[in-house]
Length: 348
Image 1 (cartoon, rainbow, N blue to C red):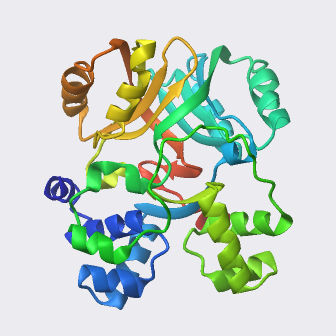
Image 2 (image 1 turned 135 degrees about the horizontal axis):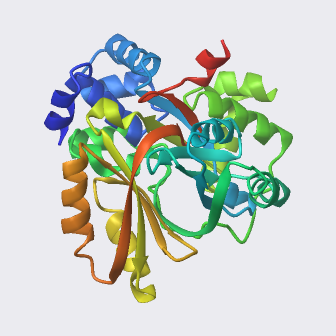
Image 3 (image 1 turned 180 degrees about the horizontal axis):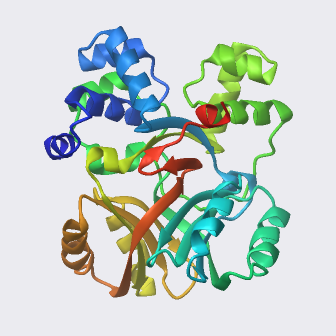
């Protein structure tokens, strides 16, 4: 898969893709550690990483999990008046409690995910602001019930095999592998002011040093290190490697809405999590009980994937494939065209 990805994206060299994979494995690994594992010089890794970030190919950021704070997560589908969806999508993308936003259905449908920190914040968006928007013709909200894959980019398996098992072992990992867990914890974490400042700094740069995090939190590097370890362990935050999929040759993205027999939901969800094309999959409430996001190189590959591999899954009753016309925001990061926008550059 690596050769095909790099050949379709001449701006990326094989070493660039290897660095991206190394970051997936250990997002906060030092440039020295990555250089040793990849057989490159530290300066080469540093230079290539900074170019990939500047070009909007990758972004490393700390992503908050509201479920660890006791808050549910929701997917929302909006049907809008022709010509109005882009403006609504842009407004949603500017909200901190909206994690990703996509336009589909010839630009008349918006799909987004909420990451509300409080019940009041969620109810204000879903119960008041959106229903009162004149250009919104229809709104459907679905509670996320179980996440099968998503979060850290490590678990989008499209780049598996780029590094050898020995190289991946040398890198270690900046967190335990993604495990299927309840979306909302029964024992919510209560954040301190120091935690909030650490999380704010990580949201801007997931590779910020402990010295920089300590300065942002008015604390010490040792204390910040211990606190970050605890936040990662309790899944309050994960260090995500966001990738502009088009830069790797994946130009067809689609929202998949699956109606599956209730007894097969877990099996289908876990099977989807192993598919290289699937970047996200979750069980949700509503008429479609599984939602997934697929990345393919083109529409023909999307057709082959959905008709042959997904279409043959036991328990599948029906499926809606909704190609994404424009991705406005992904995992908290705005996009310009098919590239990620660094928040620090946007503010500058």
